Amino acid sequence: MRLGIQLGYRGEGFADAVDEVVEYEAAGAELVVVPEAYSFDAVSQLGYLAARTTRLQIASGVMQLYSRTPTLTAMTAAGLDYVSGGRFSLGLGVSGPQVVEGFHGVAYDAPLGRTREVVEICRRVWRRETLIFSGDHYRIPLPPGEGTGLGKPLKLINHPVRPRIPILLAAMGPRNVALAAEIAEGWQALFLDPRAAGRVFGESLAEGRSRRKPELGPLDISVPVPFALAEPAPSLLDRHRAQLALYLGGMGARGRNFSNDLIRRYGYPREAAVIQELYLSGRRAEAAAAVPDDLVTSTSLVGRPDEIRRRLAGLAAAGVTTVLVSPLAATRAERVRDVGDLRCLIDEVGPATP
Image (cartoon, rainbow, N blue to C red; front, side, top):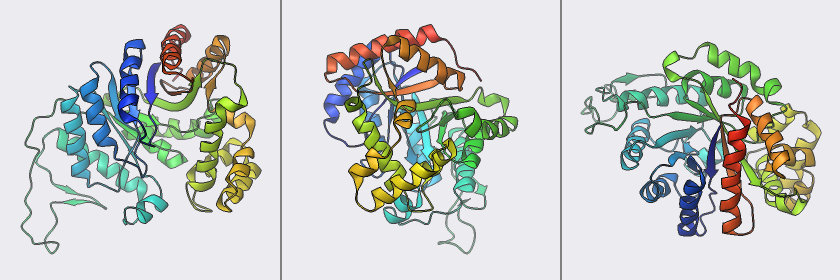
């Protein structure tokens, strides 16, 4: 199991955060992931991280598929792979209609079809093929009758460091998870409850893997978790509880909230409805209080070493191959120490179960 660091998207104290990432690298972390949401772009921060680290893999977690053309996405990924010396993985996701239409002003349509086409276009660009693509959603160059008619097929000027950059697809719904298992090197999960993973995701993963090409290799499954080597006091997980309330209640509209749908599938339909109603009514503290304690615990990684070993074994049994931690300890020295200790615990647990 790989050990990664999940950065936040609030943006405060970035220079200090990167200094800390450098220490995490020395302590045994193998990957750092930068989110985007509707905050600062991930690309600028990833370039800075590439310059400050030497061994650490870097990944977007995730770049929004609708906010860039497929070709720009491919160019950006190739550029980050170039400045990092071949250490970049392209995390992509479709976000949701509130962000895509409300912030970017782009129609949120055909997320599965667009994802499949963007992945294919990126791989053609990285192979330096002369780009001619005619899909249901993207046509490159623009066909006759669209634009000026002066567009011509081109290929990337530069030779990428790698002709195949790993693609990690963020997914929650059954069809999205199946697509990730079919066409991507990795699946970026969110709020993964390992106890329910087989029941909720097993069929989708099996479906996608049945169509997966051998050259993609085994599917990497990554999951972000708040982390501390400490007694799981309620106050330690207050921020995680609030984040769950935000995603379950406010990251989406009634009837179109992917995180809310997920915990319903976990077996919390009544709680999902209550959290969303409270959050959308402006009662955020009550929404956070309504998040089930069991869900807070199962989607985090907090405890003494024996408990962490048990939880890591559960993640491995659920197929998780990369754990992305957000260290919670109060001081930088404690957080770095915890990451180093976690590296040792992960090595004890062994590999994931496919």
